[in-house]
Image (cartoon, rainbow, N blue to C red):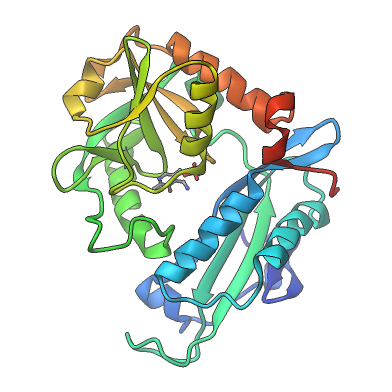
Length: 306
Ligand code: PMP
């Protein structure tokens, strides 16, 4: 992934993709404290369109604040660089990855005297969980790993180190032949996927766990608004894994995963065992929205920069 053409923005400069390197004593590499974002740009007739860019950059700054990291660039600057990363790499569609990390100025947990470095890279990235799965749904297992407790790592931050938990859960699910993991919180209630929020549908009402131990997903927020606009009631509540088993429909949401139907949890078939009608309706509206085809949601789209 490091051996390719392209440009990566690194602390204010555009660096050749192959040269965008750090030292092995980079602090974040050792202790995992860093913050990042994942943003998508979609191909439209008028060029690439970035979906909810400002909200992602705002979340990056919130994550940095939670982690006590001072980014040293303005939000406006990182918004602009995100657009430039797509344009300079000649991308029609893209996954944009801003990340802030501590440098190699010192070691130890005090983390004093360290510089916060910022990079923004962009590359083409297709469907995260597979085209087929977007239609037919994925098979999920409840993880043996518990989602972070709110007072162990900060769940409102999209922090690098938090993803050890996600990767353990996803690896376990993949090794066991599933597509994704569902993590429960410390009290045993449904929290989220390894990189997605979860929703269930029961009797045409949509439910999702509150954000206690799940990331405040921007796609989750989008789905909340789209579903409400479509006339659905969307309710945040504690959800148990067996409630998911007997729900009519279930789906994951995320920038990478978009809206992915869940067809099975722990070998129990959910609903009809394929994408349900509410999921399909939301998926269709979501894609119309991110591809800039829906006039009502143009305010979420940043375009006209390449
Ligand atoms: N939860 C976790 C743990 C994630 O990594 C992500 C992806 N950023 C999400 C939820 C979904 O967030 P978003 O919709 O903002 O991509």
